[in-house]
Structure formats: structure tokens, C-alpha cells
Length: 97
Image 1 (cartoon, one colour):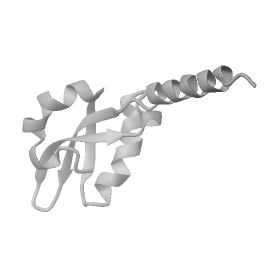
Image 2: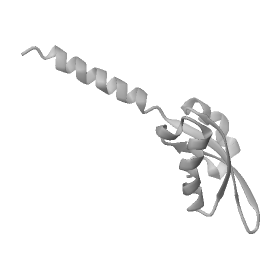
Image 3: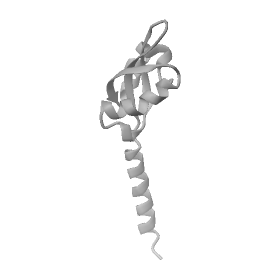
Image 4: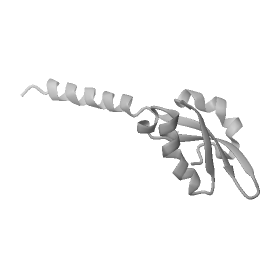
């Protein structure tokens, strides 16, 4: 039996899985009170929630709420290339939730 075809199919499948699994991140604004605390943060969101800021908000709000935060807005969605420029601004909230 020729092993090239199954091997090629396996390699192709793995390559597609890697593309479909691209990391997706959202930067957000949230609040907690009392007393009033405002936060800017960065969180990884599932690829399925990366289609719009509304989808990302739906995925992120429950995670923040579990820690006592209320999501105010999702600022933007981006890939791994945007992490470094946001890390200092997010401080403690960088990839926390």
C-alpha cells in the first residue's frame, strides 16, 4: 500500500487545524464597586468569539463577573502580534481572565 496519500492527508489536516486555532485576544474596560475601580485588561477569547466585539463580550463578561468585575466594553480584537504593545497598559489585568 502506498503510504504517501495517508501521510499527505494527515499533514494537510494538521496544517488546517493550526490555522483554525489562531489565538485571539480582546482588550476590554471593566469596573468593580464599591469603591469604584476601573480597569483596562487583555484576555484571550475563544476563536468562536473572535468574529465581533459583541461575541467577545458575551464570552468575556461571565469570566469577569465571576471575579466581581462588570464588563463595560470590548475595545478591540487582535492576534498575538498585538500583545506586547498592550502588556504595560494592562498591568495586573494582562491575560488574567
